[in-house]
Image (cartoon, rainbow, N blue to C red; front, side, top):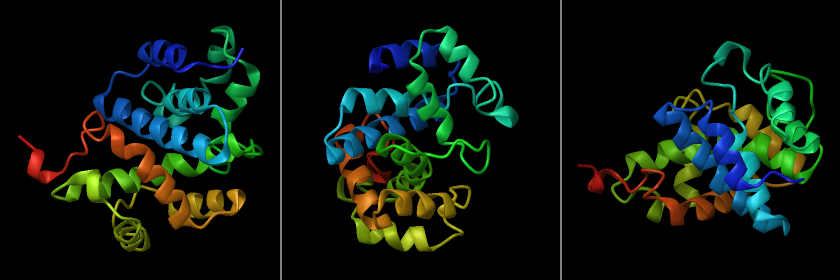
Length: 191
């Protein structure tokens, strides 16, 4: 049975408690929902995969994804969904190459949302008026949000047959309605 967003939340709560990681899970979740809409796929399912993708990261940061497969399969997560989650570690944590649009999207969106989030945090109105042009300026500056791997984003976009700007536009639009939950309302709204 395909992973649902409700089940992904249940499973993630058992492992992910750090505020920044919960926010990252949500960013990836909503961006994946937008990618699902773009590809005409099941939005809830893609969001669930996005939300659960860093399941073992908080407890095992140096062994990320090594404690995912066995645990999620034991929890009844579909093997295809587990594979999708594992594939976002391709090239840096494992050799599970993203093959489906879902897997390629997760591989790309994981790093891409980090730069979107960093851009939005600097702006007076946060995510609400973030344009792709502004994002692309920051994307090209490798010192900005330096921990976000641009090479992974470029490789993922190539797999998807998309320009970075196209993938970014989809993700930004998918994240905008959730700006308050993502704490990306901007510097004017900080208390």
